[in-house]
Amino acid sequence: MRISHAIRFDFDKNFLYNENSMIQKDDPVRGEELQFGGDWTTAKLQVLEAYLQTYTTALKNTPFRKAYIDAFAGTGYREERREAANDSLSLLFPDLAEPEPQGLLAGSARMALRSEPRFDKYIFIEKSTKRCHQLEQLKSEYPELDIIVRNRDANSEIQDICTKKWKNHRAVLLLDPYGMQVDWQTIEAIAKTKAIDLWVLFPMGIGVNRLLTRTGDIPDSWRKRLNLLLGTEDWHDEFYRTEKTTTLFGCEQEKVIKQSREVIGRYFIERLKTIFSGVVEEPGVLRNSRNNPLYLFCFAAGNPRGAPIAKEIASSLLRRLR
Image (cartoon, rainbow, N blue to C red; front, side, top):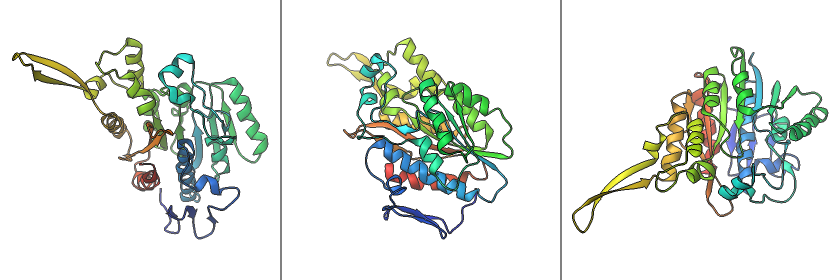
């Protein structure tokens, strides 16, 4: 992906511009999305929108067919309150039930449809039938765009999409789950295309860290979920270390120490680096209103030729979330 020198970012002034057009922070239609600040969902969308604009501009005069894929598209709107899967998850992950700012704001799907230059195709995946009906309404709002809505499990649908021929196609894919629904097998399928740039929320604080008990004794169901998310079973040795101490009576005893969130996050980044052409080393950190880290916002570039510049751009965007 080659980027024209005419395109540049100036986040201190809060606008993205090129030599032909300028979107300023006081723009009544687009400005709010380009300003940094506010809650973590807004911050995430600001980064993503800026990347999509740069991505489609860079590939505008290339022969590639470009797609935007949203794997957990929701309704197209970001609603006032995110829903937990069930009451038991609400108790384990109370941050999922934390109220968002008032009002309906554009979610990732609607934001992507507004972003210019446009993609050739938009694929929105949502397991909820009700939410899919709402996503279908976007087709009438944007009749000029090629919009596909899939009512299916995200992991299954993405893995199927990734088996297609990608030689003449490129895509940006957002994996934005409510919790720990993404399987490593899906991330591997994305990497194998060598054509998809991936933005993924890793549930470090809102999921993984909560399942890692202090003692290291983890229920089988939790261990299975972590295995699926991380694609391996060796995470336990990475997330825990054993210290030997001597008691007052000269006896040795072992103590299990749980590693920090930073170690957990670094482990996931290293896992991404084993399969993608380029990965941003320092992801963004999305925090709740109490400043607790919920997610890491990670970027991985699929195409070897475009990876260096894609990684550079994503890193500059994520710097404001660190």
